[in-house]
Length: 100
Image 1 (tube, rainbow, N blue to C red):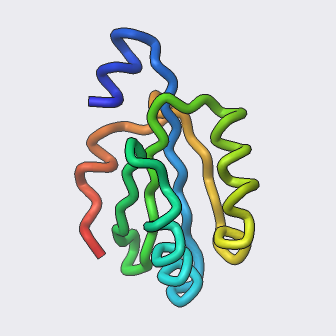
Image 2: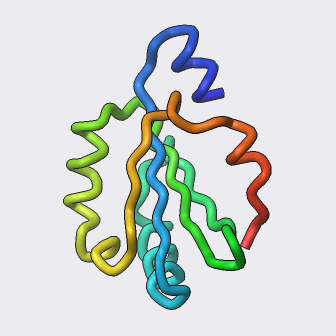
């Protein structure tokens, strides 16, 4: 739905991908679950048998997403982060990910 809103109404949305050592990713996931906004979506998936966190930040542009990441710096400091605009990711890539 967020992707359609972006395409139809040009509403900003960002995706944050967090990866790294299993223990660091799992610790980040536990801490981030309680700190995201009600409209955000967080999911834990796996990529090549490693845990990966995806966080969708609807109604958020790149500058706002960077500010969100800075506020969460203590949590995400030990993992690798990749910030993507919603239009940079193929929806099939997300749908095909396996739950962790």
